[in-house]
Amino acid sequence: MAIQRIEEKVLVFDGENFKSAGVQIVEHLKKENDSEYRFIPLTDRANQIIENARELNPNGEFIFERNGDRLIARAVTYWLSKYCRDAGITYKSPHCTRRTTASRMSTEGMFSDK
Image (cartoon, rainbow, N blue to C red; front, side, top):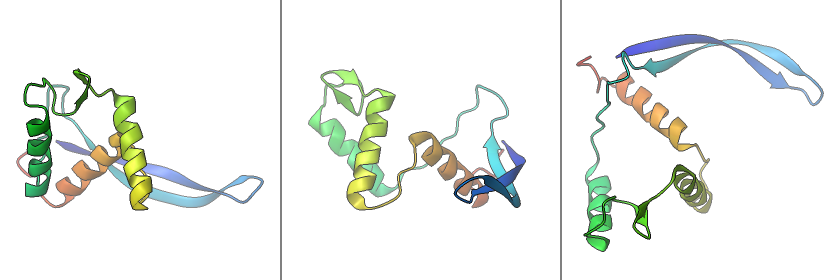
């Protein structure tokens, strides 16, 4: 696994125009090749949620499905947005959440084998 470091220009909007607020260095995880997968360990609570979902639909092909079909990306985004709003926390897209989680796990040494 590689870390991609990017220099970003930070802009702020003053009500009329965008003005430069400096530059920041951003680190992003970058896969070495398209066949590489990241395995993220789940907490006991996350495993229990998945187990409960399987018990509710023991014959389902997918863990989370509706009317026998897997949830589409838009549905996942909708439910995540709704639950974040209900909990009073800032919504982040599934992609952003996955990327942030992978970055933080890497920072903590969870991907040190690559």
